[in-house]
Amino acid sequence: MSLLAGPLRILAIEPYFGGSHADFLEGLRAASRHRWTLLTLPARKWKWRMRGSAIHFAREAAPLAPERFDLVFAGDFLSVADWKALAPPPLDRVPVVTFFHENQLSYPLEPGQTRDYQYAFTNLTTCLASHAVWFNSEYHRASFLDAVRELLRKMPDYVPQGIPEAIRAKSRVMHLGINLKPLVAGRRGRPRRPPLTILWSHRWEYDKNPEAFFEVLFFLADEGLEFRLAILGETFRKWPPVFEEARRRLADRIVHFGYLPHREGYEQHVSGADIVVSTAIHEFFGLAMVEAMAAGCFPLLPNRLCYPQIVPPQWHDTFLYNDDRELRVKLAALLKGKGPWGTAAKLADYVQRYDWSNQARVYDDALQSAARREREPG
Image (cartoon, rainbow, N blue to C red):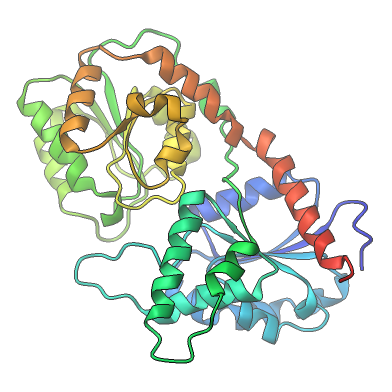
């Protein structure tokens, strides 16, 4: 095995290699001082990825077994318990660090759906089989551990004791690294004058609560306030009907409507916007919001989920809101040209801590520490 004095040899396994998962892993590999080998599958059919990807990767990794890796870095769709049972020697003994972008215990369900506890238990056994478990925010970790307790309470008997405590003991919060430099470079220096552009850059899905977002815009439009609207974010075959309603009712205000597959176009629209709004009912980190903040957008965010941890406490009153009425009031004031834009500029500087130029060393040192602890006797 490596003496761990130089760069580590890391085998990264990502069953859902697309979107933010792919951006994160590629960004980490590019910025890291360690040596990476990637095994990936396309980002589709996530349930089947959780069920079967360990079998696929165990077979695909067989030719790599003689390379003597120091760590396996796994995405949360991998069943690590299955991987360790099926991987060829000596890969089956290489310590695994699992990174949780999301989880299947505390992810909110659409109305009418019921939770499939098979996937929840896969997340749980993945934690138990991993050497270390990393979450992208403290909110994510806390909500996951609360959900583990609730899950175990459903067991009729022979309930294993100390599971949340065991997972917490091996867990760590590791905020995402992001390539923010193009967004910073695109920040606008000119004064913000009406009509301002409001940005939607979430996925077009129920957990981002687009109904609440557009209801606020419909109200403000009916009140006669001027604004422009850029609707970005990833789309799927089906999306909430409110997007079509918005395209019809706000047609004369829309400057862009739809997913932008090329990063350059996305960055251009984000940098050209003035205000970014979230009405999400689910957010473990808030990647799109951080990108918009870095570009100089004034964020209006719900006072819940991960947002109170992303925004420093001294600015909570400025950027967070407690209900839809407060969102309407704050957004209306901004659209009228009233707002502490200097504070938004300070927030833009603050979130630079998430750029890979700062985060790469944090990740590299944490990976080195994880590998070293595994090798220490006792």
